[in-house]
Length: 171
Image (cartoon, rainbow, N blue to C red; front, top):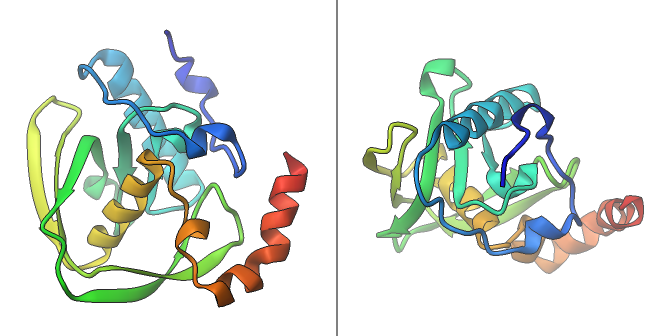
């Protein structure tokens, strides 16, 4: 299947691909590299700090991230695996480019390790207890069909109910 990279756009909830479990990327090809670069462009335009392939309509296990906004800090994670979550958890307000205007306090491990391939096909392993750790967990959730609305507290669900219903109605 050939991807029309220039036509990739961020899809909004309740698009069905957002609920699919993404499939591993079999090889880092020119097409995968082009998709990764397009996703970085879309993430910066939005603007956001991360964007998963399902958010552009592709059920691929791949996401892009940049915690600083500096182009030199752009990263692409292919077939990521999270490990070594800290016992210490932290609540932090998250938003999502596929759920515009919806924000919620989400509890996640403060620190985590990620292992993935980059666009050169090299395996990288990183550990963070800062914003990158949260981004990696949020984006990996997307690869498993999990959204922040699934992790919200009951209070946040009530506070965001109207916006969620509007997104569902717009579909």
